[in-house]
Image (cartoon, rainbow, N blue to C red; front, side):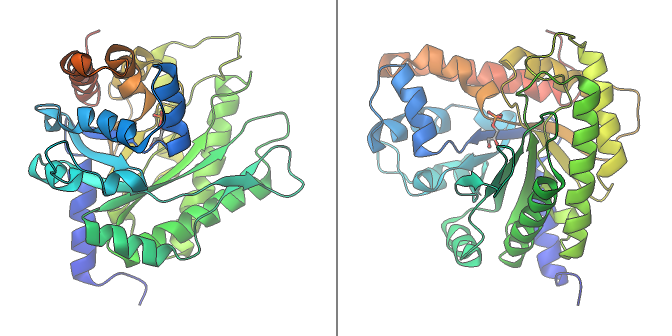
Length: 340
Ligand code: 13P
């Protein structure tokens, strides 16, 4: 057989559709312990398990978070943590109608003889890890593969590796009842222009969808988490939100099958406001779009939260208000209704 059995298809499809329900998107808080450690250091706090827990507790106890957040992506440790009063985060999220998901990719390591390109690890033993997270209550997963733009990169080697790794990961997820979010991330680093980014994004996505088909991945039970098509950070020519929106939707229309229920962008180093304004423009473009187009932001939902919290309990309410401000803005932007 080349398709999952009907009950599994139904489960995957309904989870994927719930995550991209109108007006909603994903809160990505799957920073590794090393990654969140840098954020904690910036607010003068130590990278302890308790501080990581306190910060995530602040996010998950935000009242009415689910108004514009359908789902959240967790790092392994967070799946097992509890609030101050002993409620498991997983129970709290479920009660608040937020679907928990898990980051499954592990370390990035160099691709042999490449020009600073990487592959991601974590495929060994992946089915067992999926089964454990499913048992804990996760209903979806994500796996990010970064692709760097340079004069001669991404190479064919890196693009094919990304496609194969993501397809194998997606197939294993579905076999264990998790919706895979497939994340090929064409990085913002570099001085390339928007045209080059669009071409690279199209090439990468075309390779990814060929590989997903080769691995019998059931597309209705998947989501895509791509970069937006923008000029590189170091490019001297800037583009308007409308130009970025047209380039992004054009690249997606050329490569992402209509069977995919939704596309949830990463923020990739854009500012909070840029990420919202671009998402809004994307949802206003005058081109046919068969998928929901929403957010799965990490940095662009949390930058102000970190600044306001600053590691201090007395700032919790104010930091939660910042989170709600961003989720509301993006909840409007994913419907093309944001007004700055
Ligand atoms: P950013 O939105 O910070 O780029 O996060 C992307 C991501 O993959 C988090 O899950």
